[in-house]
Image (spheres, rainbow, N blue to C red):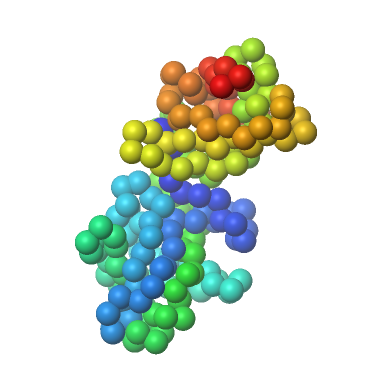
Amino acid sequence: MPSNAKNAAGAPDDYVVLGKLTSPYGVKGWLKVYSYTSPMDGILEYPEWVVVQRGERVTRRLIQGRRQGKGLVASLEGIDSREQAELLAGAEILLPKQTLPTLDAGDYYWYQLEGLRVVTLQDVDLGYVNYLFETGANDVLVVQGDERSLDGKERLLPFLPDEVIREADLEAGRLTVDWDPDF
């Protein structure tokens, strides 16, 4: 089962994106947080966040965080007013990869699966894992076809270990799936 830490788009390879600061919450500098972690409030377990906005990275200590309605809100060190919080709206929350917990065998962070070549049991190349997303029932791999793939098509594959996902070989950069290329 993959965990939702994502590759950091504009960040160095040694960071993952855990979430995003979306907008101010209240007048005392709190911010609404969109979390990519599973469970959602898992992001609050990390005491320091690397906040990136407009290419600038700043480490901020998490003072307090909590569920608020269907989302999360957080208070960060040095952000004491709504005006300061507004300046962080849209910023990504990064974490150094080495601080992520070690997963059990057969579990993967999403960033580890992104970029893997996807091949069927019959060794048909379907493309590479572009990204993953959650549905209610299971996670979904977006497999992007390219010049090396069978037909260049994009495919959506359910992340179902032992059913669809047969082997994830991170060292070889390969994800073997039980999938009909015509589907």
